[in-house]
Length: 147
Image 1 (cartoon, rainbow, N blue to C red):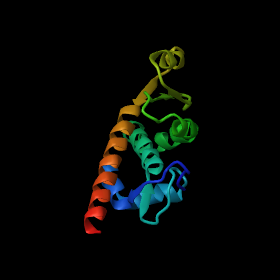
Image 2: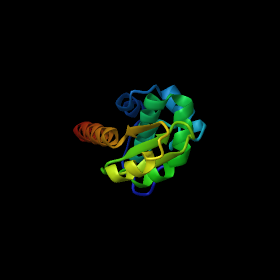
Image 3: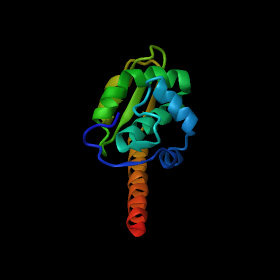
Image 4: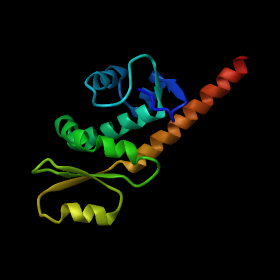
């Protein structure tokens, strides 16, 4: 499920190394329609970033709460992950989740007094984006040296 702007792909095994997730787990999330992608052996940057954001939420919230949070913010996250600050604000009591790109936006969502968790995912997405570029460049050089 590659978007039209994604012209480059890398082997799924390399992407899973970058993400720190097993291919089996990642493929399960794809089959459950939690993240973008397919199980055919190659993946795009959009698909890798989708998985990275979900993994960050799982690490901070646990799988069940991450799934609840991700279903609420994944479309907005997909639209706003191009190098900008990106935080996921989770109201732990009411299970409401919001995407924030500034301190002011976070402040608006935490003033109610209920327990919240803020998961900063922007830096992780930038790290994964850079790693994807290195893998892509390395594979491109390897292909050129073989020809």
